[in-house]
Length: 111
Image 1 (cartoon, rainbow, N blue to C red):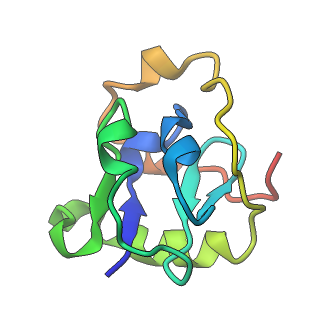
Image 2: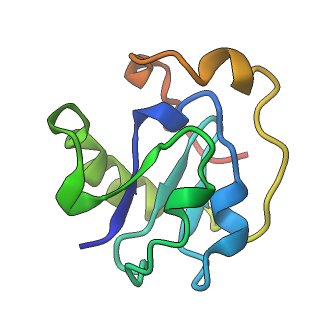
Protein backbone atom coordinates (compact mmCIF):
# COMPACT_ATOMS: atom_id res chain seq x y z
CA UNK A 1 0.00 0.00 0.00
CA UNK A 2 1.33 3.41 -0.94
CA UNK A 3 1.09 6.59 1.03
CA UNK A 4 -1.59 9.13 0.12
CA UNK A 5 -1.74 12.92 0.30
CA UNK A 6 -5.13 13.97 1.66
CA UNK A 7 -7.43 16.99 1.70
CA UNK A 8 -5.37 18.79 4.35
CA UNK A 9 -2.77 19.63 1.68
CA UNK A 10 -5.21 21.56 -0.51
CA UNK A 11 -4.30 25.26 -0.64
CA UNK A 12 -1.26 24.72 1.59
CA UNK A 13 1.17 22.66 -0.49
CA UNK A 14 3.96 22.42 2.06
CA UNK A 15 6.82 20.56 0.38
CA UNK A 16 8.87 19.40 3.37
CA UNK A 17 7.86 15.85 2.40
CA UNK A 18 9.34 16.18 -1.06
CA UNK A 19 12.90 16.78 0.11
CA UNK A 20 13.04 13.51 2.07
CA UNK A 21 11.47 11.22 -0.54
CA UNK A 22 14.15 8.79 -1.74
CA UNK A 23 12.33 7.94 -5.00
CA UNK A 24 10.86 11.26 -6.16
CA UNK A 25 7.27 10.01 -6.14
CA UNK A 26 5.64 13.37 -5.39
CA UNK A 27 3.88 15.24 -8.18
CA UNK A 28 2.88 18.89 -8.08
CA UNK A 29 -0.32 20.60 -9.09
CA UNK A 30 -1.36 24.22 -8.69
CA UNK A 31 -2.45 23.96 -5.05
CA UNK A 32 -1.86 20.35 -3.99
CA UNK A 33 0.71 17.54 -4.04
CA UNK A 34 0.06 13.87 -4.79
CA UNK A 35 2.05 10.67 -4.39
CA UNK A 36 2.46 8.27 -7.30
CA UNK A 37 1.29 4.94 -5.87
CA UNK A 38 3.39 3.04 -8.42
CA UNK A 39 6.56 4.89 -7.45
CA UNK A 40 6.05 4.98 -3.67
CA UNK A 41 8.22 2.42 -1.87
CA UNK A 42 6.17 2.63 1.34
CA UNK A 43 9.07 3.92 3.42
CA UNK A 44 6.96 6.50 5.28
CA UNK A 45 9.73 9.08 5.72
CA UNK A 46 7.41 11.74 4.30
CA UNK A 47 4.74 11.35 6.98
CA UNK A 48 6.50 13.07 9.91
CA UNK A 49 7.81 15.80 7.60
CA UNK A 50 4.33 17.10 6.72
CA UNK A 51 3.62 19.99 9.13
CA UNK A 52 -0.15 19.57 8.77
CA UNK A 53 -0.44 15.77 8.87
CA UNK A 54 -1.77 15.43 5.32
CA UNK A 55 -0.01 12.15 4.45
CA UNK A 56 -1.33 8.73 5.45
CA UNK A 57 -0.57 5.12 4.76
CA UNK A 58 -3.43 4.10 2.44
CA UNK A 59 -4.38 1.30 4.83
CA UNK A 60 -4.88 3.87 7.62
CA UNK A 61 -6.82 6.53 5.72
CA UNK A 62 -9.75 8.10 7.55
CA UNK A 63 -13.00 7.03 5.84
CA UNK A 64 -13.74 10.57 4.67
CA UNK A 65 -10.41 10.69 2.82
CA UNK A 66 -10.74 7.47 0.79
CA UNK A 67 -11.40 9.33 -2.48
CA UNK A 68 -7.83 10.64 -2.29
CA UNK A 69 -6.44 7.20 -3.17
CA UNK A 70 -7.94 7.60 -6.64
CA UNK A 71 -7.11 11.33 -6.80
CA UNK A 72 -3.43 10.69 -6.03
CA UNK A 73 -3.17 7.93 -8.64
CA UNK A 74 -4.96 9.88 -11.35
CA UNK A 75 -3.20 13.21 -10.85
CA UNK A 76 0.24 11.63 -10.46
CA UNK A 77 -0.17 10.43 -14.03
CA UNK A 78 -0.91 13.99 -15.19
CA UNK A 79 1.25 16.27 -13.05
CA UNK A 80 5.05 16.68 -13.15
CA UNK A 81 7.38 15.28 -10.51
CA UNK A 82 8.56 17.68 -7.83
CA UNK A 83 11.91 16.63 -6.37
CA UNK A 84 12.96 19.68 -4.34
CA UNK A 85 11.21 21.56 -1.57
CA UNK A 86 9.72 24.96 -2.36
CA UNK A 87 7.96 27.62 -0.38
CA UNK A 88 4.39 26.73 0.58
CA UNK A 89 1.53 28.67 -0.97
CA UNK A 90 1.33 32.26 0.33
CA UNK A 91 -1.82 31.63 2.40
CA UNK A 92 -0.81 28.17 3.63
CA UNK A 93 -0.98 29.11 7.30
CA UNK A 94 -4.50 30.43 6.86
CA UNK A 95 -5.65 27.22 5.17
CA UNK A 96 -3.73 24.78 7.37
CA UNK A 97 -6.54 24.44 9.93
CA UNK A 98 -9.45 24.43 7.45
CA UNK A 99 -11.01 20.96 7.32
CA UNK A 100 -13.28 20.83 4.26
CA UNK A 101 -11.18 21.89 1.28
CA UNK A 102 -11.87 19.28 -1.42
CA UNK A 103 -13.86 21.78 -3.49
CA UNK A 104 -10.77 23.98 -3.80
CA UNK A 105 -8.54 21.29 -5.32
CA UNK A 106 -7.37 22.56 -8.70
CA UNK A 107 -6.85 19.65 -11.07
CA UNK A 108 -5.66 21.58 -14.11
CA UNK A 109 -2.11 21.27 -15.40
CA UNK A 110 0.62 21.87 -12.87
CA UNK A 111 2.54 25.08 -12.33
